[in-house]
Image 1 (tube, one colour):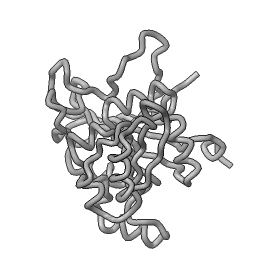
Image 2 (cartoon, rainbow, N blue to C red):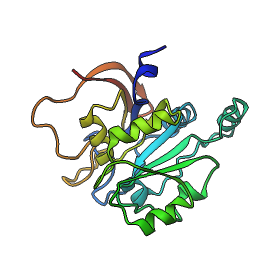
Image 3 (cartoon, rainbow, N blue to C red):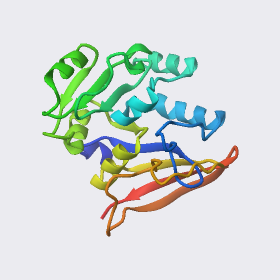
Image 4 (spheres, rainbow, N blue to C red):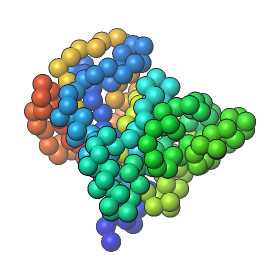
Length: 231
């Protein structure tokens, strides 16, 4: 039995592309293309080999991602292994703001989960319950530790996180991330209000430390892989 199998949560990794100045989107919080086809294919492989993909509600509202596996070959490989063609798609959405016509509901087969807080409007939760499994964790905001424990109990062992900045911060500051994969592109986005890899309140001391696993040139940028170190 591995250490992660003994853990009360899944193996969690964040995958993100950011500009040379550390931005993951514009000041309008709109996603912009930072990497190219090679990195997109790498990301698709990560999706295909994960049990679930998780994003925050901000990412859903701004980008409306489907979070599906794009490669037909990879979808076929998952099906041949007895898996759904797409990993479980999860939205962390404390107040149940996920649109009922979001692309995660309309595109691709597979299970969807919306994680909400107890304070979420019941009518909104009821509407979403017709399209996804609902996990209630936390009172005013989703309790990430409780959510991750519930996901592990449901058989999710490898969890890919695709942002955004608020969710990333919550996971990192909570000590719930094992690895971070950063593609750094050859553009400057700028803007003091543009989201970075991890926003939130920020550390005043006791910063999150990283151990460099690898660094390689990819297309016109650099792919860096980090192991997250916690005391």
